[in-house]
Length: 67
Image (cartoon, rainbow, N blue to C red; front, side, top):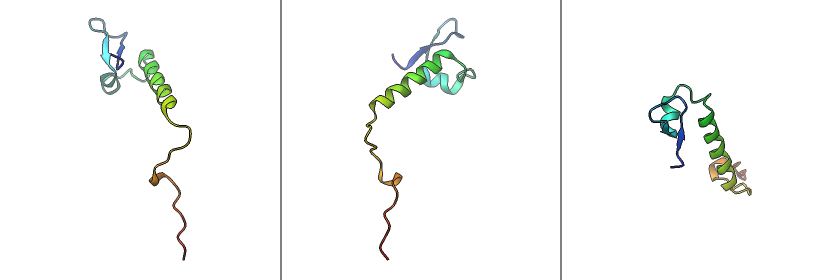
């Protein structure tokens, strides 16, 4: 149920899945309910990530090879 938001533009069935809203709605970038959901998800993801900088091997600087 946490992947649903209440759309103010829909009168009959105002509850809509976020992915449908993201891909189909032309007002998603200005919709307050959608933007609050995105902001809450971003904040939750930042709280889960480790602060130690767990980098993957492809994102690091390659070690110099001796000549």
